[in-house]
Length: 527
Image (cartoon, rainbow, N blue to C red; front, side):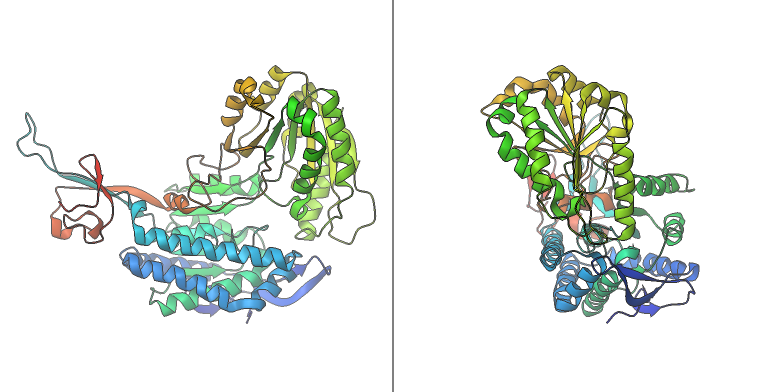
């Protein structure tokens, strides 16, 4: 049941006077539930509880942590149709998308439970002492990863489950031993509260310390600012706009004790379509990309917003077919009036740029909050001279850049900001003739795709979801998959520490039976 209150640890609380409602973009009306924004006192209480909980939570056995993560997954499934209905009412997204995202969320939690049990993420490394080494004896040094402390996670507008309350950031932080305070996204506060209730039930069932999780409502930026500035918060996870992510990053860096902000932000995800591929499969590629550009109204961080090709008759035909195909697709509902408002504004700004041509713009009547797709095109030299054209238009929009030759294509790629993904479309080893283009692309992205579409992020250990700034604030880390746990830990060494006082991960007996690096060799052996 939705109460509209904040979860301050295990307790529901609504001390504030500022209230708001979520919005149903499909029906174009407000939803019924009223949510109360967290006060400064409630924020302080949530952080205090998290700080106290951290002292116990960081020492809890891997078995109990895994039980907690699996219990969260179980409790989310217990929410059943209520969660799906609220999700759809707050996003305008279809039931199939809601169920798919719920499955992904549950899968992420279970994968982190497996990781915790397996233990490799600890990166236990032991170099034993050599007392007879000359001229100086070698000390016994042992290193492992330890959790940072209380983490603040910002819910994402476009993924109310997988990148929000119990999403990848939260699952990874809890797996690492970090209590989590979620700043729920105001567009789906009801979905967030339901998931928060599942986390609290799981915490109680598995006897986790109170404060291991809190969920705070916020209609604007104030709660987030107060959380990032709180001295007991040790790290931040964010998925959203460049403006929002950069603002949090700047706040965190100006603190008396600066903290890391792991923000996944904007990306136009360039797609390079090489000449032979255009010549042989231009029509089918145009149909495929029309679908990719409009999928979910273009509201994916991996939406292909930039298509690059070398001038030719084949490229002209591709643009023509793409323009014809994309307007055949019925527009779909966007997440919120604010989202479609920003889309229309950014699209209009892009279209207004000099020497840019609009080749497709859906102009039939649509329901309120439905995004009209558009395709534009521009010459390579114009794109290079106008940085505005490089910016993301979040929605069903893409720009085709017509390059003079491979050299200009390479230059254009080198001038792009950092991106989450880049795609190469090639035919019969054609890519071997464009090694410089591919090498340049690799330098600007976090993941390279061959003969596919960027939309869709597989949750698996090998996935890299991040890239050079502004795709993310730290390209060394991923926001998806089990390796995303590395954001919430730091290396810590013990030197000449008594064996009985060492954590289990580093003891001679290896009681957890995990794989460790001992004197340079990977082994599960005892010492």
